[in-house]
Image (cartoon, rainbow, N blue to C red; front, side, top):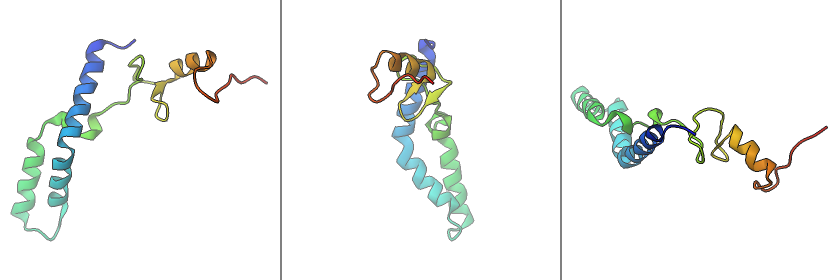
Length: 101
């Protein structure tokens, strides 16, 4: 199980990303539009830089929903490899069976 502080930090980042998503997208469009004057693009870049650092989507890290493990993460199921195997062994994931050959 991951540290509670790391799980909470990641949840806080997710909330910030969701809160500032539309504002960041609008500022990025303005900052990259080559038809606008240089001063206006620079102001948009400065406003973008003044937003909270953790509101950027690239700072998010995928974690297992059950244990908070950051590595060995399956996006489709939102589980780590360890929990995936445990749940599959107990038959709690529909259609997944233990392989043997």
